[in-house]
Length: 381
Image (tube, rainbow, N blue to C red):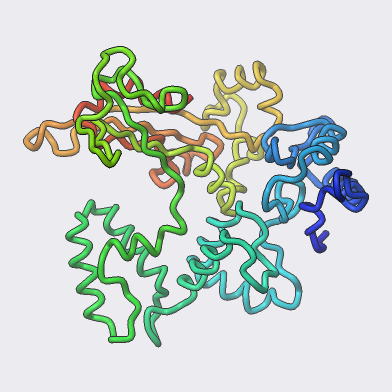
């Protein structure tokens, strides 16, 4: 069911509800209710601007919400109501799908931007969101130089991965990038520094937030406390230096990584999205525990929260933390306390892999991470 969906964001005619909008909402409801795994116990996810496809609502309430608030922004592809992502028409499916299959970086860009909205059948760049998409897509398709097997995005992604995998310093990456640039032909587009590589990959990054934190571990300057100038409990100053231009330097900073966009990225990738239902779709031998869903704790939660358990795509997370010394016993005396969330929806072979760990925050720059761990865990609730 594909048509011109401009009507979704033309709700009113003057001060009154548009008859066209009301009619099309009826068609949307009729379409969604005929799709598999959309309606559960007479309810479906509400795509209005307030609910944003998060809660399930009675179908009549969904219609009423859409009349009052309209659709959430950029919901041209009805992925929560029965449509597949990135539908290809019969004329263009041949060469494009073959290219996408042979170039995983094109798929990576498409997955990263999938939740932004409608990314196919676009002849122009109508929205700033799509400018980033087209820029990244071009980098995924454009070779480093004529005859190169690597695209610009592939080279940047692999260089950034090497930095993380082997913990190379920024200066070290700069030297490697400069060497690689010198080894390429003059017309090569290879970045010669880590900052340029990072700038190219910025379109794929997930959001983060810098939160000031008390070095004594008493509080975060977050939510209702974000504008305070001193600690509530130890009464010290929030800043170690105060500048006239307002660029004050805090005692300690926590890098908070919101979990929502990271979980959405799991569902934006087709291969991973299918595996997020593994705990529900794959029967196991009775009496044998091969996955947390076989345990009593999981079954107890299902009984206590039936509305949550009825949707197998809802995410079950395990939180864990432990301290370790990254420099060993003979090196610098410092301990690190990462907090990791594990998505238990995935099969046992995947949920405990490093690739699928979800980090909640980064306090590696803290001088007293163990002392601060209590208050920073507040970001997990």
